[in-house]
Amino acid sequence: MSDHFDVVIIGAGAAGLMCAAVAGQRGQRVVLLDHASRLAEKIRISGGGRCNFTNSGATWQQFLSANPAFCRSALSAYTPEDFLALVRSHGIAWHEKHKGQLFCDDSSEQIIDMLVAECEKGGVKRRMQVTVSAIGQENGRFTVQTQAGKVSADNLVIATGGMAIPQLGATDFGLKTARQFGLKIIEPRPALVPLTFDPQSWRPFAELSGLAVPVRLETGEGKRRGVFDEDLLFTHRGLSGPGILQISSYWEPDTPIRIDLLPGRRLAQELVQRKKGSRQSLGHVLSEIWPRRLAENWLHDRGMPAAQRLADTADKPLMQLADSAQPWTLTPSGTVGYKKAEVMRGGVDTRELDQKSMQARKVPGLYFIGEVVDVTGWLGGYNFQWAWASAVACGRALSA
Image (cartoon, rainbow, N blue to C red; front, side, top):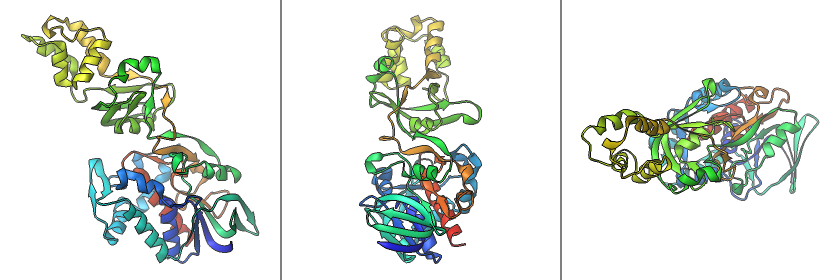
């Protein structure tokens, strides 16, 4: 294999496929390389196999970055409605679920088939199971050496994603390539990921594993503060569920998270008011407010008998009980890591890239798109929207 193209794209995931389709349809000779045997595995497993392909409410404000305004241009130029128009043009039925999340009615494979069809429309060459061993520059062109030979092109696009879900083939290839060309990296780490706690301190709560409750979660301060109203899920090792995945992207090691276990209500006030004339036990009253398992666990952990009558309990311990839950403040020991993370936070420093084209400022012809860039969206289709938007910005720039 020894070929010359206008564009070589490494990574046949969401961003790579979209960029290839756009550039190809605008007259560029494009080849798409990937080391996997099947393309777009993250699309395939997304949304329980139905692909949460975007979020109708996506704006730049739902994304984290060391340079927050960077993603604004691309996300404004290619919106969720733009991607939805493409979905409709392929006759893919879809529906909206919780908080603007859009899913296929049928299967994630429909999104993959759509992207492949768009690539074919642009004459894109696809080469799977191709391992890149070296990248260089010769006579003003980029060269990509693989086990099957060498490919060269005027432009090189890195769309290899981050390190989340390594069992699907995720690696640090994109970060290594950025470093090779002298680009700065914002420290990568798992995001949208369950949090873990010290086994000894978590032991009282491990028995709640499998229990989900609606909560308000907070962490950080000022511009680094994250607040979400979502469900929390207890696990044997710590906390998971949509709310925890969201807050994990904002959480910094050795700092606490704050959990309101009764959002929108004042537990202290309710308990004191219900004391008057009540013959009910503490356990019974709390079980009307929380799931029974949580109510009994909370009382036991604080040394308060569940059978004790509410009317016989002094106001002070009731206030202390309420204060312990609003908020429940605790410090995670870490996360479960990339294996269970939905995405990688951090990546190529956006100050190294042009926000309208995704081109490296120091290296003309070199582009980075998608998850490998330091732009991380909320849970719920936002990261796919960044993949589409950054890919389209790059694809258009390649053929400008």
